[in-house]
Length: 291
Image (cartoon, rainbow, N blue to C red; front, side, top):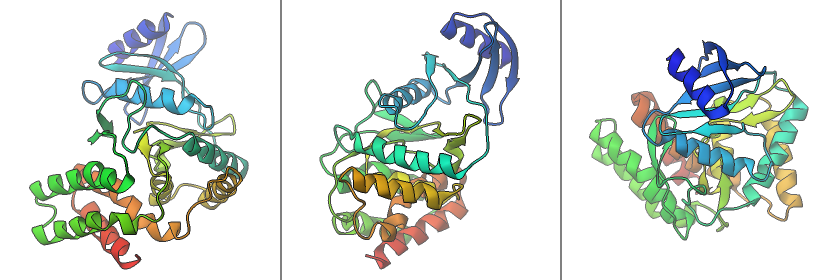
């Protein structure tokens, strides 16, 4: 892995590379002769690196939340700016919340729209993900973010037919369960705590997007899923900024957290199995019960 990573870094930066060392994420740090360090990531499948690059560029375009610079991408490799790690703190959390509200407000052409230059067949982590534009959120969420993973989980023997029917009921009722209609937001798409990077520069960065046009409550629900540090400060600053932008969160948004967590929980179900299947089924039942 080391030599291909070194070659990818040299190819996409035009600078000779020196030391190479692995990151826990499976990516590789490469030191360049000009003093910089870059990250070289090998795509999990053909096109995965290009999909991530398109998402990073789309999110970085307005500069609301810091994301790494894309130095270059090809069929196999993505070479990114390296962002040294720091510790979470309140100021960074509040700045992040404000920036995320502004990012969402930039909007997207449609629910399910991929980033400019992004592909219809994309990825969230190691799972396939379809970005297919829809006019409304309920039809998009059902067709592209819930039912494909439920079907795959059934095929894997993780849901019975009766359990899968609970998700069918949720999808049939999404127009009522989802709250007031909203325009599509510009989403990171995989905003769990591991993709919020607390950096040495005192900011919280977003990494590893599965960017698309969607409902902003989905990003917020993902932040809640795996205990993002200082989340109360992130969400408090988000709510204040959304209100100042004339786009306050709709009433009942906290009751819809389980509904929006269905997508990441179902992705984890097809990737990692039974424990997540139980969580996804519980979230579906909670979404129906709190409606």
